[in-house]
Length: 141
Image (cartoon, rainbow, N blue to C red; front, side, top):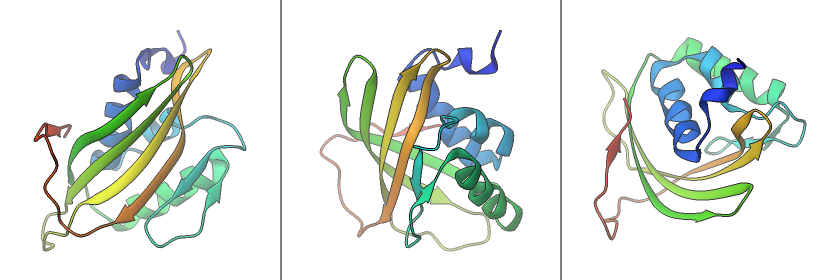
């Protein structure tokens, strides 16, 4: 069985992405991303990173300098199409020993492939603190 077979739903891929982020797990992060040159990741204040190899290298660099963190997410909006899902996500990250920061807003796009749902875009941007319409926090780690 292909390891990606576990991402049979968008929610499974979503949870895996944020677990990889919280645990600084580069192997899981690699499995979440589509292995294509069309995948795009934009970290806050970074230029676009294109292609799985470049994206995974950026996460590997971050994981060597940052310890594990607690990641809480809230899906603020979601558009689910047959082979694509677009999410607007509020991310709250807490790193031990650092002061808290405002939430980050992220747009995540997942695509259904023969290997399950895989991430094709993550675009994160810092934002001012705000109150979401519904408090449906989903602590994932």
